[in-house]
Image (cartoon, rainbow, N blue to C red; front, side, top):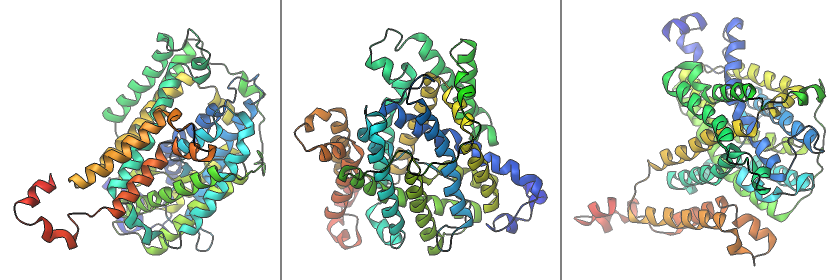
Length: 470
């Protein structure tokens, strides 16, 4: 690494967000950031479109809408990233923060669109716009809200995101939701599972037996291997690419906008959690890349940009944006803190988002291949939650909070019929699983006395302290 640093700049220069490395290195370094986040960025659009019932075949009337959503996922990830790296006044951290479509909102979006096709999209976009505006205003006091989200709460929330989505991965790997709904005999066939398993095993191989960019891009390489395997089996159809346009600009109010209470509440609550996650990513970038704490202006600017990027995305028919944690790790690995490198990556995303043929090419990935990648990605989300929970002091209080929040949230998601008598708005919010878990954990953490808090230390002195720490 020292030789690399000597050719790209001094140690002090590489820790400076405003430093511009030699031009010959900026482009490949920017592409590296795009490769690290590319699959995770477009996957939510495919999942939401699938949940809504969009047809994945080129003959389906909804197929152009799927292509548009994939296209906008890339375009507005690039736009939101530019807002972070270049900034608009106080909006933007002026740090190498890569923005992308958020997984965290998927458990909220699926109940809102389930089986309703394009007709559900205006309500979804209304929720995204409202959530983005709410997220933006959180920037004014985000640092003072962090007390409500200790590792016990944030770890549980991230774990619930992963657990609530693993079902999607299994459905995709076995043949997709339409095949399951129609009870087709090929659903769950060995052929379908073989495509998914190729992705999983190749991903594991690159993740643990290689280093550098190959390891960082393990999921992408696994998908490429699964795609080639599917092509050899005759499961890939390129007809979609020929039918897609060579250029298309973003379309304002593409799906229309409609505001519903359920969508607004759901997106605003998740925006609060997403904002705190962004604070963690900003802190991770400054610590890993520059060896310092993030400033108040950087945290505030990043939160403003998160919200603005999401609101703009909703206006044009795209999904919510957030900072991408995998790129935080990439900065720590390379030691290159330049925001200009990430700006180049953003320009690549914007360029790809203007070419529908790129989205059409992505849509040729068989659902089983995508399922293999989704199993890995969502499993990693759940594992990240477990890792965050490792910082928790597991006394009886925290175990009770965790157990009740997990049981109620996961249980309501698994048995949505238990809430069939609730109004539709409440039912959508409660059966997401994630929101009730988050609410219970935050509420109980705030009201239940903590025996390890400074004011309560006298109560756990002597021989009782040991038992309460276990």
